[in-house]
Image (cartoon, rainbow, N blue to C red):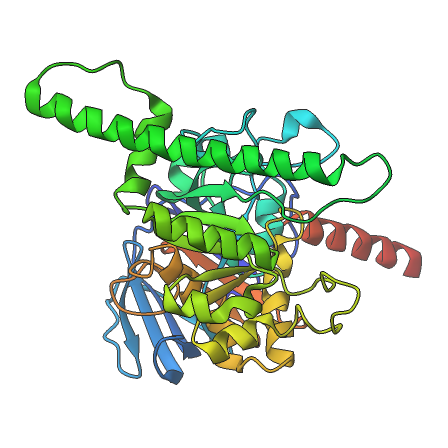
Length: 444
């Protein structure tokens, strides 16, 4: 039993403030914790390292935001805060590999939607700067174990650059774990729309080809700009003023960051793979509803897949009902690197572990399902040296639960982001306490 129960110790400027989540839960008044200032030891729990063995009745020690020891015999400093987690489980924080959390709040209110920029070619857009730290979705999401998310731009053709954010912080700068992570491209649809009022098939094909040409032209212009900039550096003769759009494309051309191509239909995926090979860029497939149909090419060119949700309907009337549920299994069996996201939403990001759980229920090995929301997204997004598993020298971004985090009945009892104890209250706990009090009034 956890000694502090639902109490969380917050270390702010060297002072310890202890507050009870049982009696005080404010839906929009969660206060981010300051940097970890004293060592913390979680003692007696079952440690699920994800990349190694499960350690029963173990201890995990972290200091200054980093894990400095874990195992059966860990030397604990005298000044450390010791928290008994006997009978509990310790997991790395879950990672949402594709999300707009923090970028949108109310879908019907345009002023609260900052996930898309105007225009088809906007590579210089960086999403972390638009993240709203006060979003109501952050407390609800982290309370279910999701502590890191890829803040993803949407809209247009080249939508911009994403960044990994942590689910706690006063400002977007404090919340940013890594930026930029990738460039995002939304591949034009190959499906012909036949509903009343739709353009003719010929016009739809022309529009698609126009978009693809615009994409190729953008990369050609970016390569020309890169060549001119390099020549300028050698000759000291200025070519022209810097262009932020093409500057943003240089890391992609240099393969410093990957291109996350959003495509679901098999024709889209095949065309995107051909394009990535021609352009010689690092591609990651996002969405990938039909990824299981092209596993041979994904495997051949080592293209990882961020599955855009498991809890969804089949894409075609004649497909089996469990087609989306078995996508991860088929990628796993084919040896394709993958991870699971919830489909990119913000309001339902808290349901991420249940997408992985459904994949496990339909054949994906249980340990692979856990990895699909921890270490696998960390590897695909280039932060496996920081998060995704419990290892020494990695960030102390972890959760303490009373069971398997993929089980809907499991509760997250403690959470830490880079060693900082996280407030797990939210609008949900506030309403729970509110109506629990009403029940007490009715009984009296």
